[in-house]
Length: 213
Ligand code: SAH
Image (cartoon, rainbow, N blue to C red; front, side, top):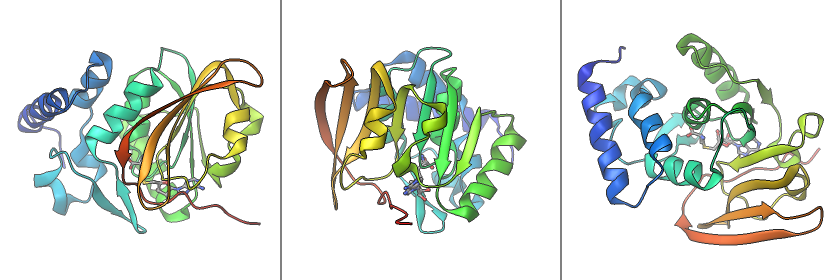
């Protein structure tokens, strides 16, 4: 599959839809306009790739809806060269958005099949995360902490303590919290012990699964 002018036109339209739904961050919108989302999905979904919808990517997982990706990216407020940890690499689409925002990206995925497939795919397209890790994102990545930002792209029944502790002072954690439905939650670390918490609308994610071993 290729990226064509037609795809680019569809992405511009998608960006307009996201603007109409309240996305305002122009850097995020430009990333959406630039990244060929149709290549991150099975070719049978190509015709739908620029609708504002989530789609299956195998291993019971989904590529998040573009609005959700844009909303979370906007809340994360990435600045160039910041160190960002992503939990749930999935298709790699959110990873690509973070890279377009010029972040240094560390991304963790717990499904081996997806981990392998997405690694090969991102490399092929020229996306270069600092590190991709096969493992349990509940634990974060202590050896690379602290992070300027942490983004969780699966629904967390509770906020993993490890992730809070791996944030820099001033750092931001964007995480959907809840079981069946999640409240998008932003934590900003104010000091070693204090966090500011802000809640946004409700979303639906596949669950963040903990590896209990
Ligand atoms: N950002 C991805 C979202 C994929 S869905 C995209 O847009 O394509 C969420 C992903 O989180 C799934 O791939 C799932 O396997 C992964 N996941 C769930 N629990 C996890 C955990 N504890 N650690 C790392 N990844 C996890």
